[in-house]
Length: 139
Image (cartoon, rainbow, N blue to C red; front, top):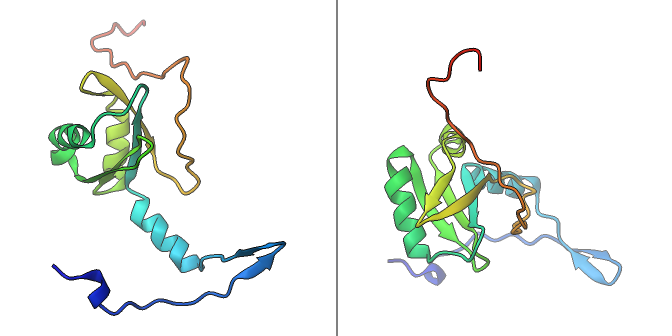
């Protein structure tokens, strides 16, 4: 395995701009576009109650979505899980095919977007998809 410090890195310096008593740096547009491309096929999930162990979430996600195009599972310290899928259509299908239950707990999934704020909302109501079959046409 390569040591990251042994490989040369191509870093660029961007001059900060003074804003009051703070210095600010705006990333160039290509950095933002690359970040968007990297994250565009991710779903972000969390559990209403306390978070589940990463290994459990990883194993369940791979079991139910692995053959549907799940490529990677990440987590942060605040209890959010990030599920990378092979393409946008797979993300949409996973969202539409829910709700999803992991170890007896419902995972709340959202499509990642550039302005997504990672916060656990307090829920008094939860939207649940219900599939009804063989319903008479008059209903």
